[in-house]
Image (cartoon, rainbow, N blue to C red):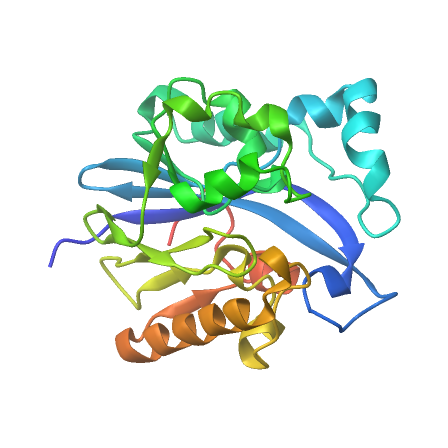
Length: 259
């Protein structure tokens, strides 16, 4: 069986927010510190980034910072990110540049997952057509409209497909209209399912709790995706990786070690 070669979790920033953002109807008034992650996947056919973090300019420039993040308080505190957490920095540490990335696969288009495209001009970008349509509707408050400016050049995909050897795109809508997870077969050990924001925390998976924000308030769609990812993990023996769980992230191999 052809498999991916290696997987690196990349910490692109952190964010403090009210826990009910991750666990629907649970955790109001309790604030958690969450990692903002991207993942670099090396395959025999090339390199893939799953998500790309925030647009650093919106964090570093005071005017842009205020315009984009002040309105999110008090539920969200503005993301924290420094130069060393930008995607090009992580790539450089591995002897790579953005030109060495063959595909950027966006699990969804919220600002903390798609904003970093500003540092990756020229890369091929994959996104679900339903996700882009919802983002362009203006009805998803987690999307910054300016981050869709190059969307006409992106590859709009529909449904599940093999992204590369050992890397499969898995539909997991609910948090957003076209949310996608990734399943990765590795040379050693169990496969990994990157849940994305279908499951921010282990709690979402263990107790089957929907994310706080669901597209069109459809909690059932989000729960169905959580259950489908769990079923897939049972069938394949895969590990489920939640996306914004700081304790889980700290248990992963520290960069530059790969999985």
